[in-house]
Image (cartoon, rainbow, N blue to C red; front, side, top):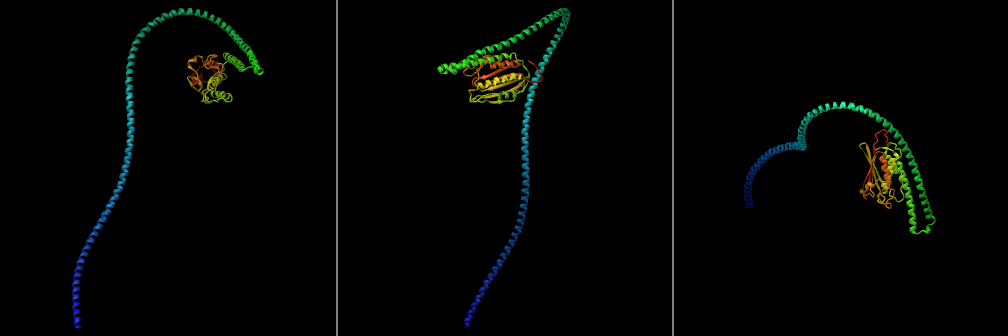
Length: 421
């Protein structure tokens, strides 16, 4: 029993000795670990101190960076401003260069003009010297002429005496001439009265047989139409048309002859109003093209309103008539003032005429188109020309075949007062 305890004690001692060794080892290890831990703590403190220094450095650098960023923003703004200023200066330089180029061109022009002016001045100086020499000669000639004038003056005194006797003779002749003018005026008035009576008589005597022909032809048409074949009916229609045309010719011829005797009453004419009145009085048959008028504002003129109205009626009627085969009838009317006269025009886009026959255009009974193509008596333009001529104006035309015509006439511009013709 004791041995067992003794063994256990031995074992326990050994165990304690082993544990002591182990504890010694552990103590040594702990000492080493403590030293290592102390070293690590010292290293950590160093790293902490370094980190504190690094953080301070980083904070300082961030502050420097923020300062630099602020400075960069300011610098960028300054740079942007400077760039804008440079662009302005560049634009100003471009303008200045253009202005400089323009001024150089002007200087070159002025230099060229100065060269020409100098040449002209030199030429004028030469001319002046020539004129001076000519004046010296002219003065000598004038002195000679003065001597001759004195001689002629003496001769004129003699001639004046003879002229006075001649004036007495002329005065007597003028008195005789005035008497003859009075007699001729009375004869002309009598002739005009006889011409008026003759015109009326001719008109009446010519109308009577025409009315008779027209009347008898209509009787044949109404009462005996069944007895005529187609050709006979055409002949009767032709007789009626020609008798009607003869009546129109007589009317136009009488109107033309009366123009020479009609007194022209001058007043201011509102031409725009007058043309609008003529346009409103136009009558059209069913199926006819209604004209499209382009009426510009017309300047006023002086003249006889009733006669000038007839001019517009004839010209507008012609423009409509010679446009009847066109899809549209377009008429343009305008006018302008130049050198104390007013020029009016009426343009159509109709049949037109050949300008090589222009000299026949304003003749009595002259026609540039056939009767079958366009009706008319051929006296309308003659009436226009006679009226315009009585107003001291002119009438003319321009045309191209199938492109239309433009007729012009001129009248004195209205400047106040009441001058007569």
